[in-house]
Structures are given as C-alpha cells and as structure tokens.
Length: 145
Image 1: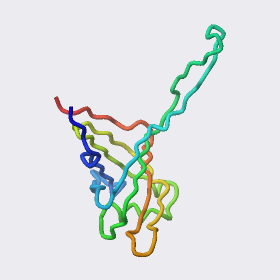
Image 2 (image 1 turned 90 degrees about the vertical axis):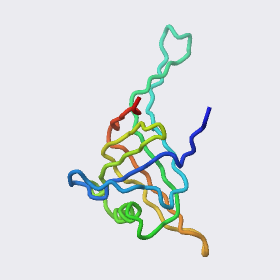
Image 3 (image 1 turned 135 degrees about the horizontal axis):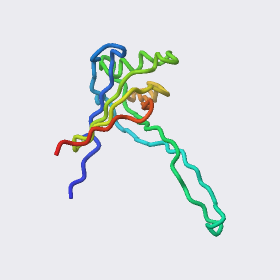
Image 4 (image 1 turned 90 degrees about the horizontal axis):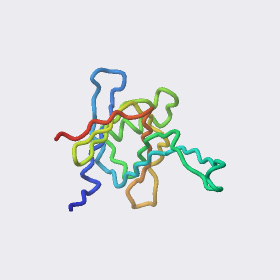
C-alpha cells in the first residue's frame, strides 16, 4: 500500500470571479500546510429507549481548507487572495477546486476567510494563513475508472 504525500493534492482558485469560464490559478507556491475539515454540526439526542445513552446525527456541515505558508509576492494565486484582505461580503467570493491524488475533484463557490499575514520574525520568511470555505456542498467528481 502506498501513501500519497500531501503535495500530490492540487488546489486552484479562480482569480477572475464573475467571468466565464474564469481563470483558475494553481495554489501551491509557498504553501507549507493545508488542514481540511468538514466542520460538522451534530445533534446528540437521548431517547427513552436508549437507557440514558445518546445517538448522534450529522445535521449540517461546511467543507473548509485552512492554508499556511510563506508569502510569495508575484504569485498569481497568493496576490489574488491578499488583494481581498480588506474586502467583505461578496468581495471575498470566488470559485475553488481541490483535486485529490486519485483524480477525484471537489469544486464549487467559496469564500476566502481569515486572511492573515505575512508576519514573523526578522530574518524569516513572511508567514501567512487563510481559509477557503466552500459555499454549500461542493460538487464531487469521482476519479476516472
């Protein structure tokens, strides 16, 4: 069994939202880490027939990706993201694609959230963080057979 490295995942962000077909720029330069979460909302309920034990249902979710890395001025994707740092509302909306190593792809509208940095110690590379929050359930395309 082979384990795929995280750098086998591909991430792309639309740097021209509102245009068709848009311009998908690779989000890879300077990225050192990505944490992916489904941010599930659960309902835990106890029923009379459960002898005091609860059962859990997932009643909501939002797929989010938290990125960290080093700021690289001139990188199309990073420059686009940081150009949105002072925007609010629809100014933070665009489209995003995440392709897994096996070819499966998640895609959809998103919001760029929690843009922070670059910052850090003198003499170190400028560190940044930001998050991609899918707006609703992302479309999933399974890998080709």
